[in-house]
Image 1 (cartoon, rainbow, N blue to C red):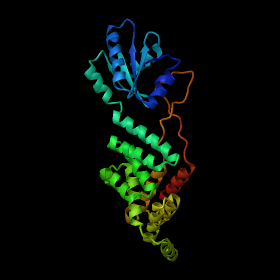
Image 2 (cartoon, one colour; image 1 turned 180 degrees about the horizontal axis):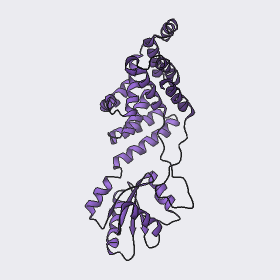
Image 3 (cartoon, rainbow, N blue to C red; image 1 turned 120 degrees about the vertical axis):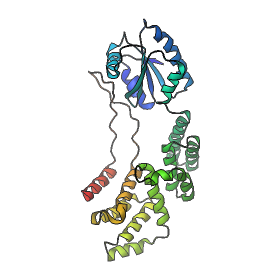
Length: 316
């Protein structure tokens, strides 16, 4: 638990909530219900074991922040608690609620213990992979999926790692529980849809003869079947830019060919190449009070930007 002031609210409230949810307890020394609620919140912070952080703000000492939040939520009394997630105030409650109701409120916003464990495994796997310890990295990712089967990020990273290592059977088995999400043509999960395209390319390009495909294309530049198979071959071999170059040739000549399969594959490769935005700390500001926070700009990848522009020019 930490006390929030004008001097530390940026670091301990806004920035801290980029890493984990922060529950802000707005109280005052003269408030009887506040004295009841405070110890209960401290008990729950311990019980939730790192799933959220508790911060306290004395409304008499820091009225600037208390009044802004009160106006934002239309609240006129204390104790008043506000949940901050990713630098934003997202929800709140008023009064000294019983423990069961507070737990219900917390459970809507804080990650489950299994999700935290899976997230730690994924982070550890990234470090192990960078060190070249592939087996240990895969073990961490497998444990993450076993621990939190519904964690989309853990499963995505596991399947992607298996595909990068050419372990197709294991990748197919790990992907099977979410294959339906990737096949949903109405609201597909973008990252799973990208994995499905990659898996299909590996399977369909098996035994492909690149020299024969290139000869067929040289003879007929509109031989889209040969060009698409060559793109799949490149993708299966993780030659992503070469695959997009072939797909772009199809898109420029016939955007709608075969149900826009070339465009869909191109977009999938961009998704595979795009790293998820980090939970960056909010940028420091001075002069005026801003509670919403502002995430630091994520540096773009010049290669991805280049191929996005190429696709945009081809389509429009």
